[in-house]
Every structure is written in C-alpha cells, then in structure tokens.
Image (tube, rainbow, N blue to C red):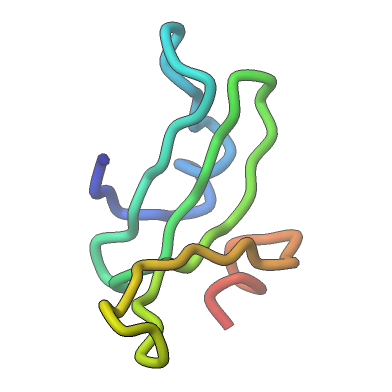
Length: 74
C-alpha cells in the first residue's frame, strides 16, 4: 500500500510493479480514495470504506465510474 499525492501527472504515469497483477496508490489528502493500476495498464479510481451494517464493520472497496481524477474526487 503506497500513500502518495494523487495528481493528474501521477495518475498519467502510474505503473504496476512487474511482479504483481495490480497496485493501489492511496491519496494522502483524501482518506479512502485511491488509484488502482493493473499489470495491463488499466487505471481505475477506488473508494475504500467500512460498512456499519456488517457485524464486524467489514472493509469494502468500490470502483468509481469516473474518467478523470477531478470527476472521481467529486
């Protein structure tokens, strides 16, 4: 898990490590918000949260339907 300053330049150049199939980069300023990069170079924005309805408050992750960092943050 890497915590970085997500900006447009970072999103455009982010790559997955050679020995893994996906990499997550979490935003330093917006907790739970991040970027997922796959080995094939696919980028997607993610939100991770805890669901209160679960007995143990399970951590969940949701992919955002956004084309840009600005849209995903909104």
